[in-house]
Image (cartoon, each protein chain N blue to C red):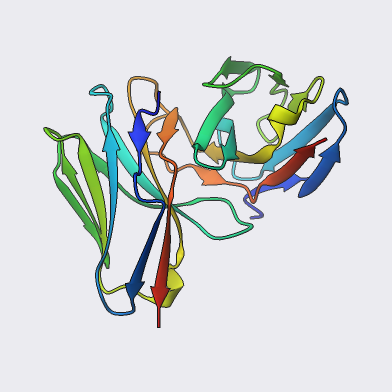
Length: 112
Length: 114
């Protein structure tokens, strides 16, 4: 049972436009959500996170939105840059600290 | 700091062979964990450790053993490799356990079991 789902395997956007990556979860015990970015042949790197007591967190070009009633979060990248091309994973943490549940990942391609 | 290092980068095993994937970190992190990444599955937690001498199971522990004799090292042992263990393995560490502590990932080990 996939508790964290990223239903779009891939997303293609033009440089300068907005990229929106989506993530849905089913477990209402999740209380912290993270986005990781992964380049080929490298490990994931932390990008941005949000606590369940907030509905928005912003860091430069990256903003994460959380809709708890819909059990949905999204990552907005504005403006998108070719260097943002990578696989993006959303992850959730619940009652077991440090134990992350990951989504399947979305491949983002930003075209110059 | 080298961060989190993993060896080897690539490995091919025959069914039934055993091997150890090495993971080391030089950040004096207490929390370390192992994940596997499979197509369409994201990353899944295999085992984790909250400090030297303490380990626990994650989501998919079967077929794997771990030990944590030092803060720096957290090896993952495959006792009898099976084709279902073909995957990319990532080791991660963080200063402490809890959502406010960023997890740092190693570059991964790509394992193929034939």
